Length: 316
View 1: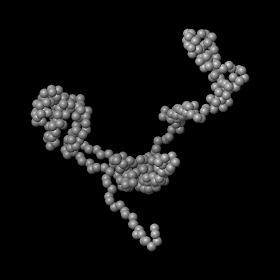
View 2: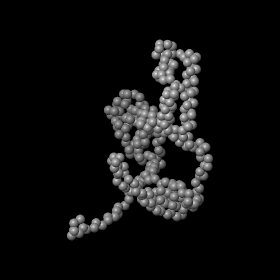
View 3: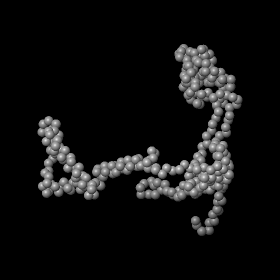
């Protein structure tokens, strides 16, 4: 900023708006109105199968001939709707009489004033296992807008748990970094969201379940899972090294041993198709079946290869 220029400091603006409620107001049905159960109606509802009746109802929504072709629960449902002051639209009535099971299987087709409304909260309250707290204390992670009175009423109304005292604190989020646009750049730093934690004092003691000591032998043990995952990772590394630039050391050692045997005269080089009896017989126009002598030679070669592999692994 150039000299001689005085900048006015902008004061921080505090947010004074009230937070919005996380749940909607509960609207109870007026009177003893039964809830229309879709499962119960699907088993007994009878639709209109006559196409002529459906055609007349489609042309004239006030036609009442459909009542003679449906079951009593369908007509009772339409009468109850009219008694409550809610009339079905022509397309809704046509869908109802043509397929009552499909109509009642959708909860939105039942009117709001004919069923009890249940509103679930949209915020999480997570109970934490803290080994440093006694049996008369419990710790929760709660939203930032939740107060002590909210948590007290939450535990009382939902779980019938009485609370003596509540202590709350806000933990600051750590500094993290966003991923960069490319591998050679770093993203911007940002602060992780804050966490609000409340510790409540209970009237009745609560003990966490004891952790199993023999967890490796338990039915829900993850030892087999991790062993399988480790074996798959080792196999993938072998495959990637074989086809990549990093060769396997055991493979290089076996190739060196074969070259040494050739130079010392212990083995004789031959094309690969000549070393395989089946391929050799097929290439020379003979029968593919092996003779007893060839089968014995093949088994000896396999045994020798296995012995070399075991000795190489032991030497490694």
